[in-house]
Length: 407
Image (cartoon, rainbow, N blue to C red; front, side):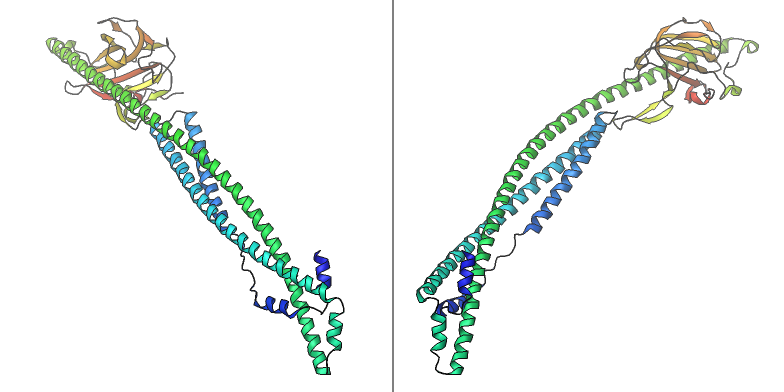
């Protein structure tokens, strides 16, 4: 049909009315859709999704290892923030798409209106061409009264044919534009449905993250209470041990002062033994002397070291002395205290059972008990301390510095 129209319109016998109409009709302004903004918003959403995927990988790592609950809560907060930003981004994307749909709909309506008018004009033009017949142009040329009028009529008919061809091309252009914008509207509608579906999923995810956060916060608070109670028990045990050592030292000093000076003996732990004492058990250190940071960011002070060992491992005294206490001692469980004289004491806690009794003399390397478990969080280990006498107040020293280096 279009080829047929073009064949007729290539002839110079066209109407002046059509040419005038074509001169008055403006070109239809139909810019391409604002895809750049939509692509930018999609890129932003993709970036937020990648950020959240990184956070979820970190959460998986935290759940598969020993971790701090504060870090898990912080991770959940960041994931919830990323998801909330994603939901807001989807809302903005939906707003932009809806605006683009409205704009595309207006453009389609305008294009269809113009297309309808152009088709009507083209239809009338074809009717006039068929009515006038194929000889109209020849008749118009031959009826010229002079050569100048002949040239003017030819030029006028040629211009009229050009304008008619422009009308056909404009009709085709409008048809293509309408089809393209219809396709664009279909794609935009699909994008709307996809974004709405994404929003529903993200809102569900956000609610789950918020529940997880609340659960983790409650768990963290419970863990903090447990840790605080444990630290209080350890501190109370340290005070109890310090008071017991002070009482034993006071008793020892009274007994020592009653003895003749010639019969008094010094400590069996000599300065020359520094860094040369045998380990009471072989194993790695669970904790070291001094201040330490717990998993819940709480500071704890240890007056000794924890040496890891399996339950039932023999525990041997590091130097000769006399057993002055065998019994339960707070969080250290079953504990043996050995007096080495001169205000020096060694303490062996977290035992499963003791092989010695009060006031029993022991020799260096003698087994005094076996390793047990007094703190489930630390597992089986030996709590080992050395208290060094100073003016009747034995102070805790770092026992690891008195022991030999591990081979």
